Amino acid sequence: MLNEYLPILILFIINIAFAVGIIIFSHFLGPRKSSAEKLSPYESGVPPVGDTRIRFSVKFYLIAMLFIVFDIEVVFMYPWAVIFKKLGLFGFVEMFVFIGILLIGYVYVWKKGALKWE
Amino acid sequence: METMLFYFFAFVAVATALLVITRRNPIHSALWLVLCFFSLAAVYVLLSAHFIAIIQIMVYVGAIMVLVLFVIMLLNLSEKELGDAKPTVLKFCGVILSGIFMVLLADGVKVLAPQAAVSVDEKFGTAEMLGRLLFTDYLLPFEIASLLLLTAMIGAVVLAKKRR
Image (cartoon, rainbow over all chains, first blue to last red; front, side, top):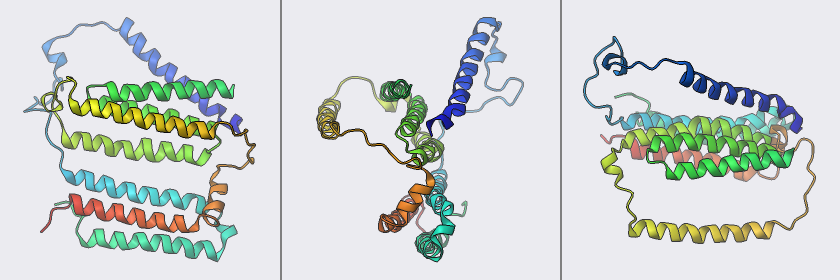
């Protein structure tokens, strides 16, 4: 079983070697000439205004949080889908209950207007 | 080979975990935590918990870490708000408490240690095996998990939604 992971391991090693190699090569080979324009955040772009430290709206957090909840729901569906045929009607009903409970939450979220971007 | 891989990934996990708690910039800490989760996933693979390993990467590295970064950016602490690195009474208490926790944890591991290695089924830890267990022995926990998710959903709305 563990042998099946060998391609992934090789991919990881190549990836890391490539990433580290690129950084090292550009460090030694790249010319370093800096000017005020070059160091500005957007060269020949819009001049930056104000501070980078602005607060993000909490609305982003709400959307991300709801995403994670449904993400985990789908995680539970994966092992279910693999053995769906073996489980038959029993598995179908059980998953129906599982999703039904989460559907209550979905309706609640919807009714509260949490999915609307105000 | 397996032992070598285990020591490698365990080392990376511990090293990156140390980097997480020593970095000044919270964003850097979060990115080191990503690597820490990755090496933990590799350790899960070595424990033949295949499904958990891939979920670790997909959910923790992919989703939870985005949420952590969100929170860091939401708070957006400046260098001044982060406070200086001087030791305080609170930090001292934290060190003592985590020390006690570590002793307790080590004690727990010691109890587990003497067991002989069990050989596991070829399919152990795969999605198929997990599904079979989930729908037989652990059916109730599975349904309760949906209630837990429901609570998380409602909690997020209550906390983050503006009341009208």
